[in-house]
Amino acid sequence: MLNAEDLTSFETSLDEDILKADYILRLAADPEAINHCLCETCLDKLIRSLEDRVDESQEMNRIYESELGKLEKQLERAVFNEDRSAEIESLELQLKELQQEEKNQVQELEKLHEDLAQIVVKDQE
Image (cartoon, rainbow, N blue to C red; front, side):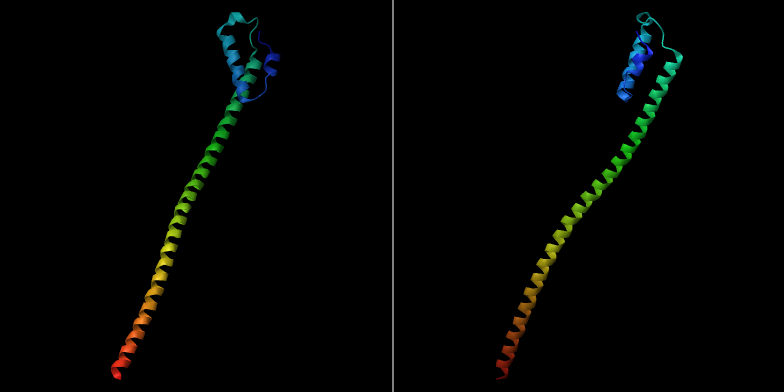
């Protein structure tokens, strides 16, 4: 038997609203199982409540979708930045190696200049 107290005893969460609607639909499917009908006012309230919950759920879904999109973009940027960081580290290492090679080449060039100067001095003697 369905009465107004049955409806008000439920919490107003979406799951419970769905359970209420399911209960009402099961009773409506078998009218002989109930002793009296659900009044129009109660049914209208239930429908408005369910519609409000659907609207709230849709709004929450939009918010979640928006936040998910933002998080996905942040993740893409983080991955891009991580890739860029690895690339920058690699380039910095290559730069250090090239700077060391340049330093070695300069030292070798200076040694060759010294050797050349010694050879020129010996030739002039």
